Length: 385
Image (tube, rainbow, N blue to C red; front, side):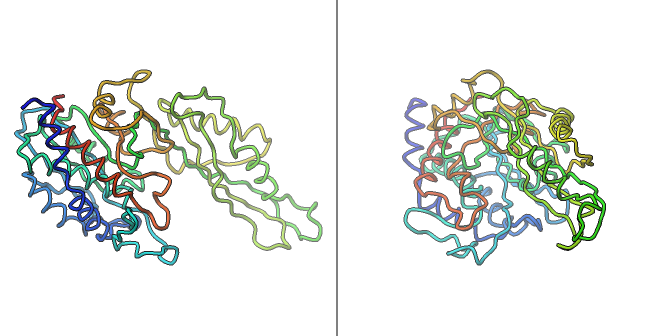
């Protein structure tokens, strides 16, 4: 059989019910972060990876912060890495119409926290390899699974920890199965999260001119920052950077002129922009308001992209396997560590949509799971590095 025939056989062997069942079983493992404990999913995924012929290894850089690593293959071929996070964001149970950790199937969708972000994507990748094995199609590469902790709060105990420990090696290409609506994402924004504080002078609320309102000054900052233009050229897939003032707190009582106020902002950045450059651009916008302030960086996450103006060979390979159009993500994923620090060709491709990630009644369309599993089966059957 030709490679085309082998890939077709593997695609045809994808079992939708099996993929849905695995996704539901993963949803039923509560891995909320915070507080941050991925260990409940460890027994399930260890059994699954062993069943695929892998030799799972646990990496635990902090108590309960577990990542599971496995290589399926001979060890002497190029590796195709599936990097997926098993932690999920918290839930407000009363906002849900279904049990958030129930894995409920309804009207062609699978509901639950992590359904699309991103336990469904991990299950689709696993089903793709199972389909190959079911019909005796040997993968053309070694398949590596890094099922990692802590992506939702920055990756310190997950992919970043693996990077610093030197545990990401032998990889010729990587797919991060975050929800991409089955598009092939080759670029993503970074983020600068910062707290800006303003000091005022308290006075009686009946005569506010005797004081200096920190809230009034903060309002000027909000007006300057929200949806500000930072002067960056538009990126072909990511547009121009944005800024959102998401939190404001200050004052003590309505009849007291506020002596302090704080803002927390989310300033998105483009690939290649450093922390220093992002802070400088933020300060330039703040300085134009004339308000005296202090700024503290809470988090900086790099943007990332595959090199070139489009049509990267690895992205084109994934598209040829069944992926959709090339696109960008306005948010950051663990792909940044693989692209920026290790120069591994990496795309984000997976079932579901970011528009329902982190929401109540999060879901993944079941047909998306099937389509993604078929793409992974084709990739495993044909990737030679």
